[in-house]
Amino acid sequence: MPEGDTIYLTAERVGAVLSGQTLTAVSGSSGPIRANSARLTGARVVDVRSIGKHLVVETDADLVIRTHMRMSGTWEVYEPGQRWRYPEGAARVVLETAAAVAVCFSAPDISVSRPQAAQLELAHLGPDLCADVFDRLEAIRRMAVPWNDTLAEHLADQRIMAGVGNVYKSEILFLEHLHPESSPLLESEAIERLVDRSRQLLMLNRRRPNRITTGETRRGGELWVYGRGGQPCRRCRTKVEAARIGDVERITYWCPACQELA
Image 1 (spheres, rainbow, N blue to C red):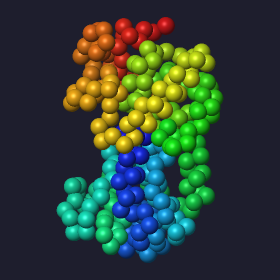
Image 2 (cartoon, one colour):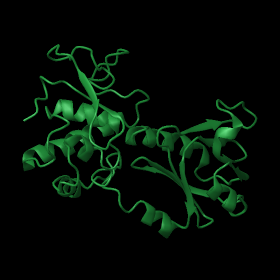
Image 3 (tube, one colour):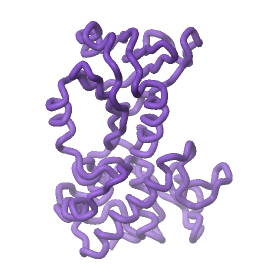
């Protein structure tokens, strides 16, 4: 699943070809897109931006297109007539201008709604970690509320901070020496460090095509623990463990020596 930094970079790429442009054709297999194609065609794109893991396209037709990639979705940008990377049947949203075609493939969560309704759809999200302006105090306040059973679930809860996904969940907890199965009830200083670390990493990576948390740009050395189950910890050489924790479907990675369960 793309995380906040990936969606931010995607929004910049899509926005570079759509913002300020007139939509000459709108199509795709998504029901909301089909239902609103006529109204969107001829509209001007006012803005393209990310909000957490959501990509939002605002138009002057008083309609907002919102997409969430989940595990399978992606946005691609093409020149008119250029061959697509994925099959046409996977195109959920196709936005064409005179000079470019932006296609959203395979995203399962798509809506087209008026701005106020679109705002309500996103109202549950916590402060956006990739936004230029980040409400740190609100994120700290939300992080202090134990909505989840484990810290791994808590950190990835988009109601607390928008943008942390499976990769950052594992990496942030490693850097803060916190076990993913530990309680989300933390001391205030630990909560502040978690919020600050989350903000730091996503901001560092929001314009990088390759996510880096170790500071190492060499291929294979970019991450501390994510995707490294069974391999030696980069710090202490203990074997990295991996498991599905709580209700979170995706696998969490951690070092049992660097992140002892209290």
